[in-house]
Amino acid sequence: MPPAARAKTWAARLLTLAGGLLAGLLLLEGLLRLTYPSDETWGPWRPWSRHMLLHDQSVFPQLGPSARFVVGRYGVRSPDPTPPQTYRLLCIGGSTTECLALDTADAWPARLQDLLTADGPPTWVANAGRSALDSRHHLVTLTHLTPQLPNIDAVLILVGVNDLLRPLARQQQWRPQTPAEALGDARVQAAAARWHPGRWQDEAWFRQTALARLRRDLLASQCPWVTGQPRSREALAAAVLRVRSARRQHTAVATLPPPEPALRQYAAMLDALIAEAKRQRRRLVLATQPTIWSQWRRPEVANTLVAGALGADPFEGRHCAPAALDQGMAKFNAVLRQVCGHRQTECLDLARQLEPLPRYYYDDFHFTPAGAARVAELVAAHFRQRPPYTKER
Image (cartoon, rainbow, N blue to C red; front, side, top):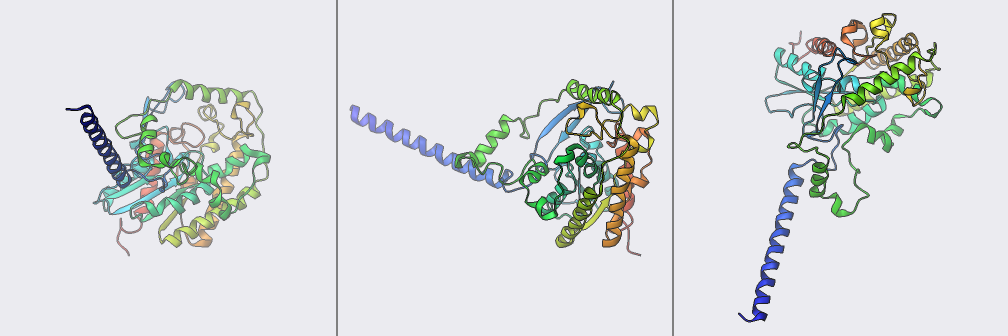
């Protein structure tokens, strides 16, 4: 074959190969856009992510040696819903809903799903908890996440403790927000949702493709077929021990700073949550926050406390006394009861119903497996009082 003809043949083959590769990439891009989570979706966590948290049981004797953290396609810490699950409940909250230190199956939303399914129609309970979030973030979650989940019937929000603690940590830097300001605050949105629109909007167009997102997820070891690396038990235990040591070296502040601005913001956010749930025509249950602070005199409780830092650095050791925190939490819970009564909204008073037993908490307000199981029982008892788990009287 003459050199010119050979060159044309190779050129045609290369063009065919390039065209095939381009067509394959376009087809894969299209398939990923249909099946892979979009950049326009919201979620507390990256969809399909997995982690393993390892515990030092000399520091956390009430916890197991490890805890799996598994996220489904909707960015919540729950398996994906199945068609038989005809009643669907979304749980929103901070770390006491997330239950990060517990295995996914031991978190109270997962246990609640089992209890409700045993008593009524098959139920899906979605755990949208995320550590350090307060009522502002919950408003963002309710507004943006709930409509994109499949057929949510009811929303339960366990709220209050971070509304108490955040002003203490921020001190002079803390400023109250209105509901409208919280919804429009990009920092609040980013904290509420690990997966939210606009994360890559400033990137080049090719970095915004589904293929580019898949590549980022693979590199981050976050896809379903790649398991994230275990988180170090030594680092977590060392941090907790350091906070406890710093607290012992400082005298606790006996009174809280004036809580009225934070309480007013809290009441406004609760009103906004109720209004948004009514706009979406969803059943809303607001739950008060239980803690172990009332038992602070017991040595087995006092030695586990770490919350209530004054200032952004908990390692400095400046902190509020547990008795003061207990009184502060009581004020926030009272506001929730008052707002629910005024707005005729369901209130689940976990703060009064959950017994203040040390075996239910591994620190100030985070639940042990036994505590999570008890919370699930109390929540299930509340839902059993109304259809579809009981007949109308």
